[in-house]
Length: 550
Image 1 (cartoon, rainbow, N blue to C red):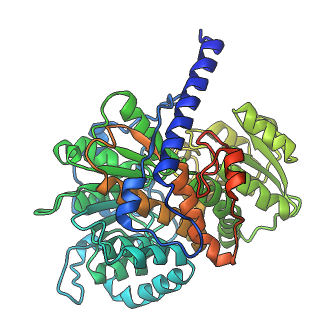
Image 2: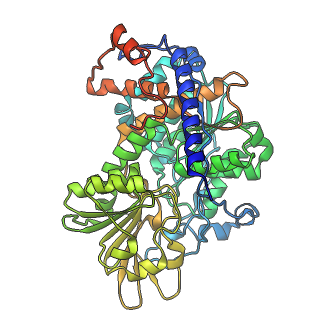
Image 3: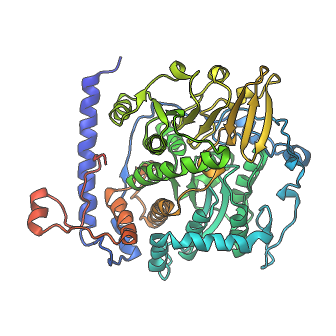
Protein backbone atom coordinates (compact mmCIF):
# COMPACT_ATOMS: atom_id res chain seq x y z
CA UNK A 1 0.00 0.00 0.00
CA UNK A 2 1.37 3.42 -0.91
CA UNK A 3 2.24 5.99 1.74
CA UNK A 4 0.33 9.26 1.00
CA UNK A 5 2.48 11.28 3.41
CA UNK A 6 5.69 9.98 1.86
CA UNK A 7 4.43 10.66 -1.64
CA UNK A 8 3.43 14.20 -0.66
CA UNK A 9 6.92 14.87 0.74
CA UNK A 10 8.48 13.53 -2.44
CA UNK A 11 6.30 15.82 -4.59
CA UNK A 12 7.26 18.86 -2.46
CA UNK A 13 10.93 17.92 -2.79
CA UNK A 14 10.65 17.59 -6.58
CA UNK A 15 8.77 20.88 -6.82
CA UNK A 16 11.53 22.63 -4.87
CA UNK A 17 14.10 21.17 -7.27
CA UNK A 18 12.12 22.48 -10.25
CA UNK A 19 11.94 25.97 -8.69
CA UNK A 20 15.73 26.06 -8.34
CA UNK A 21 16.17 24.86 -11.93
CA UNK A 22 13.73 27.50 -13.12
CA UNK A 23 15.73 30.18 -11.31
CA UNK A 24 18.88 28.98 -13.06
CA UNK A 25 17.11 29.28 -16.38
CA UNK A 26 16.00 32.81 -15.51
CA UNK A 27 19.60 33.81 -14.77
CA UNK A 28 20.76 32.43 -18.11
CA UNK A 29 18.05 34.40 -19.85
CA UNK A 30 18.50 37.61 -17.88
CA UNK A 31 19.91 39.48 -20.89
CA UNK A 32 17.16 38.35 -23.24
CA UNK A 33 14.02 40.36 -23.83
CA UNK A 34 10.79 39.03 -25.19
CA UNK A 35 9.38 42.26 -26.55
CA UNK A 36 7.93 42.56 -30.02
CA UNK A 37 11.09 44.04 -31.48
CA UNK A 38 13.61 41.86 -29.63
CA UNK A 39 16.32 40.07 -31.61
CA UNK A 40 18.09 36.96 -30.42
CA UNK A 41 21.25 35.30 -31.67
CA UNK A 42 20.87 31.56 -32.14
CA UNK A 43 24.09 30.92 -30.27
CA UNK A 44 22.69 32.84 -27.31
CA UNK A 45 19.52 30.86 -27.59
CA UNK A 46 21.33 27.54 -27.42
CA UNK A 47 23.51 28.57 -24.48
CA UNK A 48 20.49 29.94 -22.63
CA UNK A 49 18.18 27.04 -23.20
CA UNK A 50 18.58 24.41 -20.54
CA UNK A 51 15.54 22.19 -20.27
CA UNK A 52 14.19 20.78 -17.06
CA UNK A 53 14.52 17.01 -16.58
CA UNK A 54 11.36 15.19 -15.64
CA UNK A 55 11.04 12.02 -13.61
CA UNK A 56 7.31 11.49 -13.52
CA UNK A 57 6.30 7.92 -12.75
CA UNK A 58 4.35 6.27 -15.51
CA UNK A 59 1.08 5.04 -14.04
CA UNK A 60 -0.28 3.52 -17.23
CA UNK A 61 1.88 1.17 -19.22
CA UNK A 62 1.58 1.67 -22.95
CA UNK A 63 2.37 -1.72 -24.43
CA UNK A 64 4.39 -1.91 -27.60
CA UNK A 65 3.18 -4.04 -30.46
CA UNK A 66 4.65 -7.51 -30.52
CA UNK A 67 7.94 -7.40 -32.37
CA UNK A 68 7.07 -10.34 -34.55
CA UNK A 69 3.95 -8.58 -35.80
CA UNK A 70 5.69 -5.38 -36.74
CA UNK A 71 9.17 -6.21 -37.80
CA UNK A 72 9.47 -9.80 -38.92
CA UNK A 73 8.39 -9.34 -42.49
CA UNK A 74 7.88 -7.00 -45.39
CA UNK A 75 4.69 -7.57 -47.39
CA UNK A 76 4.47 -8.94 -50.85
CA UNK A 77 3.40 -6.61 -53.62
CA UNK A 78 -0.03 -8.25 -53.80
CA UNK A 79 -0.53 -8.24 -50.05
CA UNK A 80 0.25 -4.60 -49.49
CA UNK A 81 -2.31 -3.37 -52.02
CA UNK A 82 -5.31 -4.89 -50.36
CA UNK A 83 -5.35 -2.98 -47.07
CA UNK A 84 -5.56 0.65 -48.13
CA UNK A 85 -8.61 1.11 -45.91
CA UNK A 86 -7.75 -1.29 -43.10
CA UNK A 87 -6.95 -0.45 -39.53
CA UNK A 88 -3.29 0.51 -39.33
CA UNK A 89 -1.31 -0.95 -36.48
CA UNK A 90 0.51 2.28 -35.76
CA UNK A 91 0.34 3.18 -32.07
CA UNK A 92 -1.96 0.23 -31.38
CA UNK A 93 -2.00 -3.41 -30.49
CA UNK A 94 -5.08 -4.27 -32.53
CA UNK A 95 -5.08 -6.42 -35.64
CA UNK A 96 -6.16 -5.30 -39.08
CA UNK A 97 -8.27 -6.90 -41.73
CA UNK A 98 -9.77 -5.87 -45.03
CA UNK A 99 -13.35 -4.64 -44.89
CA UNK A 100 -16.07 -5.08 -47.49
CA UNK A 101 -16.66 -1.50 -48.56
CA UNK A 102 -18.99 -0.41 -51.33
CA UNK A 103 -16.47 1.78 -53.13
CA UNK A 104 -13.82 0.56 -55.58
CA UNK A 105 -10.97 2.92 -54.80
CA UNK A 106 -8.88 0.02 -53.49
CA UNK A 107 -8.14 -0.92 -57.10
CA UNK A 108 -5.98 2.16 -57.62
CA UNK A 109 -2.29 1.52 -58.15
CA UNK A 110 -0.22 1.88 -55.01
CA UNK A 111 2.33 4.75 -55.11
CA UNK A 112 4.93 2.09 -54.28
CA UNK A 113 4.35 0.60 -57.71
CA UNK A 114 4.53 3.87 -59.65
CA UNK A 115 8.04 5.14 -60.53
CA UNK A 116 8.10 8.93 -60.20
CA UNK A 117 10.80 11.55 -60.72
CA UNK A 118 10.75 15.21 -59.72
CA UNK A 119 11.99 18.06 -61.92
CA UNK A 120 15.50 17.68 -60.48
CA UNK A 121 15.68 14.05 -61.58
CA UNK A 122 15.40 12.62 -58.08
CA UNK A 123 13.26 9.60 -57.30
CA UNK A 124 14.05 9.47 -53.58
CA UNK A 125 10.43 9.87 -52.47
CA UNK A 126 7.10 8.08 -52.65
CA UNK A 127 3.94 10.18 -52.85
CA UNK A 128 0.55 9.86 -54.52
CA UNK A 129 1.28 12.08 -57.52
CA UNK A 130 4.30 14.33 -57.96
CA UNK A 131 2.36 16.31 -60.58
CA UNK A 132 0.29 17.84 -57.77
CA UNK A 133 3.34 19.76 -56.52
CA UNK A 134 2.24 23.14 -57.90
CA UNK A 135 -1.12 22.92 -56.14
CA UNK A 136 0.63 21.88 -52.92
CA UNK A 137 3.00 24.84 -53.20
CA UNK A 138 0.02 27.21 -53.17
CA UNK A 139 -1.29 25.47 -50.05
CA UNK A 140 2.05 25.97 -48.30
CA UNK A 141 2.21 29.64 -49.29
CA UNK A 142 -1.26 30.21 -47.86
CA UNK A 143 -0.24 28.54 -44.58
CA UNK A 144 2.87 30.73 -44.34
CA UNK A 145 0.68 33.83 -44.17
CA UNK A 146 -0.75 32.71 -40.81
CA UNK A 147 2.54 31.37 -39.41
CA UNK A 148 4.38 34.66 -39.19
CA UNK A 149 6.20 33.79 -35.97
CA UNK A 150 7.76 30.65 -37.47
CA UNK A 151 8.68 32.58 -40.62
CA UNK A 152 10.22 35.26 -38.39
CA UNK A 153 12.33 32.63 -36.64
CA UNK A 154 13.39 31.30 -40.05
CA UNK A 155 14.53 34.75 -41.21
CA UNK A 156 16.39 35.50 -37.97
CA UNK A 157 18.36 32.26 -37.91
CA UNK A 158 18.74 31.51 -41.61
CA UNK A 159 22.11 33.22 -41.97
CA UNK A 160 23.57 31.39 -38.98
CA UNK A 161 22.41 27.91 -40.09
CA UNK A 162 22.08 26.51 -36.51
CA UNK A 163 21.04 23.11 -37.92
CA UNK A 164 23.89 22.77 -40.40
CA UNK A 165 24.87 19.10 -40.42
CA UNK A 166 21.63 17.98 -38.80
CA UNK A 167 19.98 15.02 -40.49
CA UNK A 168 16.41 15.01 -39.23
CA UNK A 169 14.04 12.13 -39.77
CA UNK A 170 10.45 13.09 -39.02
CA UNK A 171 7.16 11.28 -38.53
CA UNK A 172 4.28 13.75 -38.20
CA UNK A 173 1.06 14.68 -39.92
CA UNK A 174 2.03 15.92 -43.39
CA UNK A 175 -0.03 19.05 -43.93
CA UNK A 176 0.63 22.51 -45.32
CA UNK A 177 1.44 23.73 -41.80
CA UNK A 178 3.95 20.93 -41.19
CA UNK A 179 5.51 21.72 -44.56
CA UNK A 180 6.25 25.26 -43.35
CA UNK A 181 8.07 23.73 -40.37
CA UNK A 182 10.01 21.28 -42.56
CA UNK A 183 11.08 24.02 -44.96
CA UNK A 184 12.12 26.14 -41.98
CA UNK A 185 14.37 23.32 -40.76
CA UNK A 186 15.87 23.01 -44.24
CA UNK A 187 16.44 26.78 -44.39
CA UNK A 188 18.31 26.53 -41.07
CA UNK A 189 20.70 23.98 -42.58
CA UNK A 190 19.09 20.59 -41.91
CA UNK A 191 18.60 17.68 -44.26
CA UNK A 192 15.18 16.09 -43.81
CA UNK A 193 13.46 12.82 -44.60
CA UNK A 194 9.78 12.63 -43.66
CA UNK A 195 6.88 10.22 -43.28
CA UNK A 196 3.34 10.40 -41.92
CA UNK A 197 2.22 9.47 -38.39
CA UNK A 198 -1.37 8.89 -39.51
CA UNK A 199 -2.54 6.99 -42.59
CA UNK A 200 -5.40 9.43 -43.27
CA UNK A 201 -3.98 12.88 -42.47
CA UNK A 202 -1.51 13.36 -45.34
CA UNK A 203 -2.32 16.10 -47.84
CA UNK A 204 -1.14 14.48 -51.07
CA UNK A 205 -0.49 17.75 -52.87
CA UNK A 206 1.67 19.02 -49.98
CA UNK A 207 3.69 15.79 -49.92
CA UNK A 208 4.25 16.28 -53.66
CA UNK A 209 5.36 19.90 -53.19
CA UNK A 210 7.91 18.91 -50.54
CA UNK A 211 9.23 16.08 -52.73
CA UNK A 212 9.61 18.52 -55.62
CA UNK A 213 11.92 20.71 -53.51
CA UNK A 214 14.16 17.75 -52.63
CA UNK A 215 12.74 16.66 -49.26
CA UNK A 216 12.47 12.86 -49.25
CA UNK A 217 8.80 12.30 -48.36
CA UNK A 218 7.26 8.84 -48.09
CA UNK A 219 3.54 9.26 -47.42
CA UNK A 220 0.13 9.43 -49.02
CA UNK A 221 -3.45 9.57 -47.80
CA UNK A 222 -5.02 6.14 -47.32
CA UNK A 223 -1.92 4.06 -46.65
CA UNK A 224 -2.30 0.48 -45.52
CA UNK A 225 -0.67 -0.85 -42.38
CA UNK A 226 2.13 -2.35 -44.45
CA UNK A 227 2.59 0.90 -46.35
CA UNK A 228 2.83 2.79 -43.07
CA UNK A 229 5.76 0.77 -41.76
CA UNK A 230 7.39 0.57 -45.19
CA UNK A 231 7.39 4.38 -45.40
CA UNK A 232 8.98 4.70 -41.97
CA UNK A 233 11.65 2.19 -42.93
CA UNK A 234 12.43 4.02 -46.18
CA UNK A 235 12.98 7.23 -44.23
CA UNK A 236 15.37 5.61 -41.79
CA UNK A 237 17.14 3.05 -43.95
CA UNK A 238 18.77 5.01 -46.76
CA UNK A 239 22.24 4.12 -48.03
CA UNK A 240 24.78 6.84 -47.32
CA UNK A 241 22.44 8.82 -45.06
CA UNK A 242 22.24 8.31 -41.31
CA UNK A 243 19.87 10.41 -39.19
CA UNK A 244 21.11 12.17 -36.07
CA UNK A 245 17.86 13.84 -34.92
CA UNK A 246 14.25 12.62 -34.60
CA UNK A 247 11.05 14.66 -34.69
CA UNK A 248 8.22 12.32 -33.80
CA UNK A 249 4.47 12.47 -33.22
CA UNK A 250 3.19 9.32 -31.56
CA UNK A 251 6.44 7.42 -31.02
CA UNK A 252 6.14 5.03 -33.98
CA UNK A 253 9.32 6.26 -35.66
CA UNK A 254 11.27 6.22 -32.40
CA UNK A 255 10.04 2.72 -31.57
CA UNK A 256 10.84 1.44 -35.08
CA UNK A 257 14.41 2.74 -34.92
CA UNK A 258 14.88 1.47 -31.37
CA UNK A 259 13.78 -2.05 -32.28
CA UNK A 260 14.89 -2.34 -35.90
CA UNK A 261 18.05 -0.22 -36.06
CA UNK A 262 19.52 -0.08 -32.53
CA UNK A 263 22.99 0.95 -33.71
CA UNK A 264 21.56 3.91 -35.63
CA UNK A 265 19.34 4.81 -32.67
CA UNK A 266 22.31 5.00 -30.30
CA UNK A 267 23.91 7.68 -32.49
CA UNK A 268 20.88 9.97 -32.37
CA UNK A 269 21.69 13.29 -30.66
CA UNK A 270 18.15 14.09 -29.60
CA UNK A 271 14.45 13.25 -29.91
CA UNK A 272 11.62 15.79 -29.97
CA UNK A 273 8.19 14.26 -29.26
CA UNK A 274 4.88 16.14 -29.35
CA UNK A 275 2.13 13.64 -28.48
CA UNK A 276 1.00 12.12 -25.20
CA UNK A 277 1.31 8.63 -26.69
CA UNK A 278 4.90 9.17 -27.75
CA UNK A 279 5.82 10.81 -24.45
CA UNK A 280 4.44 7.82 -22.53
CA UNK A 281 6.64 5.56 -24.61
CA UNK A 282 9.71 7.70 -23.89
CA UNK A 283 9.05 7.69 -20.15
CA UNK A 284 8.59 3.95 -20.38
CA UNK A 285 12.00 3.55 -22.02
CA UNK A 286 13.58 5.93 -19.52
CA UNK A 287 12.11 4.11 -16.53
CA UNK A 288 13.45 0.81 -17.89
CA UNK A 289 16.90 2.35 -18.40
CA UNK A 290 16.70 1.77 -22.17
CA UNK A 291 16.57 5.36 -23.38
CA UNK A 292 20.08 5.93 -24.70
CA UNK A 293 19.54 9.47 -26.09
CA UNK A 294 18.15 12.72 -24.62
CA UNK A 295 14.53 13.52 -25.48
CA UNK A 296 12.44 16.68 -25.31
CA UNK A 297 8.82 16.41 -24.17
CA UNK A 298 7.06 19.05 -26.25
CA UNK A 299 3.60 17.65 -25.47
CA UNK A 300 3.65 18.92 -21.89
CA UNK A 301 5.02 22.35 -22.74
CA UNK A 302 2.59 25.15 -21.98
CA UNK A 303 2.53 26.33 -25.60
CA UNK A 304 1.44 22.85 -26.74
CA UNK A 305 -1.04 21.97 -23.99
CA UNK A 306 -2.79 25.30 -23.63
CA UNK A 307 -2.91 26.31 -27.27
CA UNK A 308 -2.66 23.35 -29.66
CA UNK A 309 -4.56 20.89 -27.46
CA UNK A 310 -7.19 23.33 -26.21
CA UNK A 311 -7.84 26.01 -28.82
CA UNK A 312 -7.08 23.88 -31.86
CA UNK A 313 -9.48 21.12 -30.79
CA UNK A 314 -12.14 23.62 -29.76
CA UNK A 315 -12.44 24.70 -33.39
CA UNK A 316 -11.46 21.60 -35.33
CA UNK A 317 -13.84 19.16 -33.58
CA UNK A 318 -16.83 20.92 -35.13
CA UNK A 319 -15.16 21.14 -38.52
CA UNK A 320 -14.50 17.40 -38.58
CA UNK A 321 -18.00 16.43 -37.42
CA UNK A 322 -19.80 18.81 -39.76
CA UNK A 323 -17.82 17.81 -42.84
CA UNK A 324 -18.39 14.12 -42.30
CA UNK A 325 -21.95 13.93 -40.96
CA UNK A 326 -23.74 17.29 -41.52
CA UNK A 327 -25.28 16.71 -38.10
CA UNK A 328 -27.04 19.48 -36.18
CA UNK A 329 -25.85 19.61 -32.58
CA UNK A 330 -28.62 21.62 -30.94
CA UNK A 331 -30.24 19.33 -28.35
CA UNK A 332 -28.01 16.35 -29.14
CA UNK A 333 -26.82 14.16 -26.26
CA UNK A 334 -23.01 14.13 -26.46
CA UNK A 335 -20.51 12.32 -24.25
CA UNK A 336 -16.89 13.48 -24.24
CA UNK A 337 -14.57 10.87 -22.73
CA UNK A 338 -11.76 12.71 -20.99
CA UNK A 339 -11.60 16.29 -19.69
CA UNK A 340 -7.99 17.18 -20.33
CA UNK A 341 -7.14 20.11 -22.57
CA UNK A 342 -8.50 18.35 -25.67
CA UNK A 343 -11.69 17.38 -23.85
CA UNK A 344 -12.14 20.91 -22.51
CA UNK A 345 -11.90 22.32 -26.03
CA UNK A 346 -14.39 19.81 -27.43
CA UNK A 347 -16.89 20.37 -24.61
CA UNK A 348 -16.77 24.16 -24.95
CA UNK A 349 -17.41 24.02 -28.70
CA UNK A 350 -20.29 21.56 -28.46
CA UNK A 351 -21.92 23.39 -25.55
CA UNK A 352 -21.84 26.61 -27.56
CA UNK A 353 -23.91 24.93 -30.30
CA UNK A 354 -26.58 23.84 -27.84
CA UNK A 355 -25.56 20.21 -27.34
CA UNK A 356 -26.27 18.55 -23.99
CA UNK A 357 -22.75 17.49 -23.00
CA UNK A 358 -21.71 14.91 -20.41
CA UNK A 359 -18.15 13.99 -19.46
CA UNK A 360 -16.48 10.75 -18.36
CA UNK A 361 -13.33 11.03 -16.26
CA UNK A 362 -11.04 8.93 -14.05
CA UNK A 363 -9.29 11.92 -12.45
CA UNK A 364 -11.21 13.64 -9.60
CA UNK A 365 -9.53 16.98 -10.35
CA UNK A 366 -10.54 16.96 -14.01
CA UNK A 367 -13.94 15.66 -12.98
CA UNK A 368 -14.42 18.55 -10.59
CA UNK A 369 -13.34 21.00 -13.29
CA UNK A 370 -16.00 19.55 -15.59
CA UNK A 371 -18.65 19.94 -12.90
CA UNK A 372 -17.64 23.55 -12.24
CA UNK A 373 -17.82 24.24 -15.98
CA UNK A 374 -21.41 23.01 -16.02
CA UNK A 375 -21.06 19.46 -17.35
CA UNK A 376 -22.48 16.28 -15.82
CA UNK A 377 -19.80 13.71 -15.00
CA UNK A 378 -21.11 10.22 -15.67
CA UNK A 379 -20.04 6.68 -16.37
CA UNK A 380 -20.47 5.81 -20.03
CA UNK A 381 -22.64 2.79 -19.22
CA UNK A 382 -25.13 5.06 -17.47
CA UNK A 383 -26.00 6.99 -20.62
CA UNK A 384 -24.93 4.67 -23.44
CA UNK A 385 -28.50 3.96 -24.63
CA UNK A 386 -29.44 7.64 -24.90
CA UNK A 387 -26.27 9.13 -26.33
CA UNK A 388 -26.18 10.58 -29.88
CA UNK A 389 -22.44 11.25 -30.15
CA UNK A 390 -19.39 9.83 -28.35
CA UNK A 391 -16.02 11.57 -28.62
CA UNK A 392 -12.94 9.97 -27.04
CA UNK A 393 -9.88 12.00 -26.05
CA UNK A 394 -8.15 10.15 -23.23
CA UNK A 395 -4.99 8.63 -24.76
CA UNK A 396 -6.08 5.30 -23.28
CA UNK A 397 -7.27 2.05 -24.88
CA UNK A 398 -10.74 0.42 -25.10
CA UNK A 399 -12.52 3.49 -23.77
CA UNK A 400 -15.53 2.49 -25.90
CA UNK A 401 -15.97 -1.30 -25.99
CA UNK A 402 -17.94 -3.63 -28.24
CA UNK A 403 -20.51 -4.21 -25.53
CA UNK A 404 -21.18 -0.48 -25.35
CA UNK A 405 -21.32 -0.16 -29.13
CA UNK A 406 -23.91 -2.95 -29.19
CA UNK A 407 -26.13 -0.94 -26.84
CA UNK A 408 -25.94 2.38 -28.70
CA UNK A 409 -29.04 3.55 -30.51
CA UNK A 410 -29.51 3.71 -34.26
CA UNK A 411 -27.73 6.61 -35.95
CA UNK A 412 -25.26 7.26 -33.14
CA UNK A 413 -21.88 8.77 -34.06
CA UNK A 414 -18.58 7.53 -32.60
CA UNK A 415 -15.26 9.29 -33.15
CA UNK A 416 -11.86 9.86 -31.59
CA UNK A 417 -9.87 13.04 -30.93
CA UNK A 418 -6.86 11.29 -29.36
CA UNK A 419 -3.66 10.54 -31.24
CA UNK A 420 -3.97 6.75 -31.37
CA UNK A 421 -6.73 4.55 -32.73
CA UNK A 422 -6.80 2.49 -29.54
CA UNK A 423 -9.60 4.35 -27.76
CA UNK A 424 -12.50 2.79 -29.69
CA UNK A 425 -12.46 -0.99 -29.97
CA UNK A 426 -12.74 -0.96 -33.75
CA UNK A 427 -11.19 -4.41 -34.14
CA UNK A 428 -14.20 -5.97 -32.38
CA UNK A 429 -16.44 -4.59 -35.14
CA UNK A 430 -14.65 -6.60 -37.83
CA UNK A 431 -16.86 -9.66 -37.44
CA UNK A 432 -19.00 -11.57 -39.94
CA UNK A 433 -22.33 -10.55 -38.42
CA UNK A 434 -21.64 -6.82 -38.91
CA UNK A 435 -21.63 -5.09 -42.29
CA UNK A 436 -19.38 -2.15 -43.09
CA UNK A 437 -20.70 0.37 -45.59
CA UNK A 438 -18.53 3.26 -46.76
CA UNK A 439 -20.94 6.18 -47.33
CA UNK A 440 -18.38 8.92 -47.93
CA UNK A 441 -14.68 9.51 -47.36
CA UNK A 442 -13.71 8.46 -43.81
CA UNK A 443 -17.35 7.74 -42.88
CA UNK A 444 -18.44 4.13 -42.30
CA UNK A 445 -21.86 2.84 -41.31
CA UNK A 446 -21.53 -0.26 -39.15
CA UNK A 447 -24.76 -2.20 -39.64
CA UNK A 448 -26.04 -4.70 -37.04
CA UNK A 449 -28.19 -7.71 -38.01
CA UNK A 450 -31.36 -5.90 -36.83
CA UNK A 451 -30.64 -2.98 -39.16
CA UNK A 452 -29.18 -0.63 -36.53
CA UNK A 453 -26.43 1.66 -37.85
CA UNK A 454 -23.60 3.24 -35.90
CA UNK A 455 -21.60 5.90 -37.72
CA UNK A 456 -17.84 5.46 -37.25
CA UNK A 457 -15.55 8.28 -38.35
CA UNK A 458 -11.98 7.78 -39.66
CA UNK A 459 -12.00 4.16 -38.44
CA UNK A 460 -11.40 5.45 -34.92
CA UNK A 461 -8.41 7.59 -35.85
CA UNK A 462 -7.77 11.24 -35.06
CA UNK A 463 -10.89 12.98 -36.37
CA UNK A 464 -9.75 16.52 -37.06
CA UNK A 465 -6.65 15.74 -39.12
CA UNK A 466 -8.20 12.70 -40.80
CA UNK A 467 -11.49 14.30 -41.83
CA UNK A 468 -10.89 18.04 -41.94
CA UNK A 469 -8.12 20.56 -41.27
CA UNK A 470 -6.86 22.42 -38.22
CA UNK A 471 -6.30 26.15 -37.61
CA UNK A 472 -2.98 27.24 -39.08
CA UNK A 473 -2.15 29.88 -36.48
CA UNK A 474 -2.25 27.54 -33.50
CA UNK A 475 -0.02 25.04 -35.30
CA UNK A 476 2.52 27.83 -35.77
CA UNK A 477 2.88 27.91 -31.98
CA UNK A 478 3.61 24.17 -31.77
CA UNK A 479 5.89 24.22 -34.83
CA UNK A 480 7.95 27.09 -33.43
CA UNK A 481 8.36 25.17 -30.17
CA UNK A 482 9.48 22.06 -32.07
CA UNK A 483 12.01 24.04 -34.14
CA UNK A 484 13.56 25.63 -31.05
CA UNK A 485 13.72 22.26 -29.28
CA UNK A 486 15.56 20.74 -32.25
CA UNK A 487 17.98 23.67 -32.37
CA UNK A 488 18.70 23.33 -28.66
CA UNK A 489 19.24 19.57 -28.62
CA UNK A 490 21.44 19.66 -31.72
CA UNK A 491 23.63 22.51 -30.47
CA UNK A 492 23.75 21.65 -26.76
CA UNK A 493 27.27 21.05 -25.44
CA UNK A 494 28.12 17.52 -24.41
CA UNK A 495 26.87 16.73 -20.95
CA UNK A 496 24.05 19.28 -20.80
CA UNK A 497 21.46 16.60 -21.50
CA UNK A 498 21.73 13.08 -20.25
CA UNK A 499 19.80 10.02 -21.40
CA UNK A 500 16.48 11.21 -20.04
CA UNK A 501 13.25 13.01 -20.93
CA UNK A 502 13.24 16.80 -20.48
CA UNK A 503 10.61 19.52 -20.38
CA UNK A 504 11.13 22.85 -22.08
CA UNK A 505 11.95 25.58 -19.56
CA UNK A 506 9.29 28.16 -18.83
CA UNK A 507 11.40 30.85 -20.45
CA UNK A 508 11.28 29.08 -23.80
CA UNK A 509 7.49 28.78 -23.64
CA UNK A 510 7.29 32.49 -22.91
CA UNK A 511 9.56 33.29 -25.85
CA UNK A 512 7.40 31.28 -28.27
CA UNK A 513 4.29 33.04 -26.97
CA UNK A 514 5.92 36.46 -27.35
CA UNK A 515 6.69 35.80 -31.01
CA UNK A 516 2.96 35.31 -31.68
CA UNK A 517 1.66 38.35 -29.78
CA UNK A 518 2.56 40.66 -32.66
CA UNK A 519 -0.20 39.08 -34.73
CA UNK A 520 -2.77 40.58 -32.36
CA UNK A 521 -0.91 43.88 -31.95
CA UNK A 522 -0.70 43.01 -28.25
CA UNK A 523 1.45 45.12 -25.93
CA UNK A 524 2.67 43.56 -22.69
CA UNK A 525 3.10 45.60 -19.53
CA UNK A 526 6.70 45.75 -18.32
CA UNK A 527 7.66 45.39 -14.67
CA UNK A 528 9.47 48.26 -13.02
CA UNK A 529 12.66 47.46 -11.15
CA UNK A 530 10.84 47.91 -7.86
CA UNK A 531 8.00 45.62 -8.92
CA UNK A 532 10.39 42.95 -10.14
CA UNK A 533 12.30 43.09 -6.85
CA UNK A 534 9.05 42.87 -4.88
CA UNK A 535 8.01 39.71 -6.76
CA UNK A 536 11.49 38.25 -6.82
CA UNK A 537 11.49 38.03 -10.62
CA UNK A 538 13.80 38.87 -13.46
CA UNK A 539 12.21 41.67 -15.49
CA UNK A 540 12.55 39.61 -18.65
CA UNK A 541 11.13 36.40 -17.18
CA UNK A 542 10.44 33.65 -16.55
CA UNK A 543 7.35 35.04 -14.87
CA UNK A 544 6.02 31.78 -13.44
CA UNK A 545 7.73 28.85 -11.69
CA UNK A 546 7.84 25.48 -13.43
CA UNK A 547 5.20 24.03 -11.13
CA UNK A 548 2.69 26.78 -12.03
CA UNK A 549 -0.49 25.48 -13.68
CA UNK A 550 -1.92 27.95 -16.16
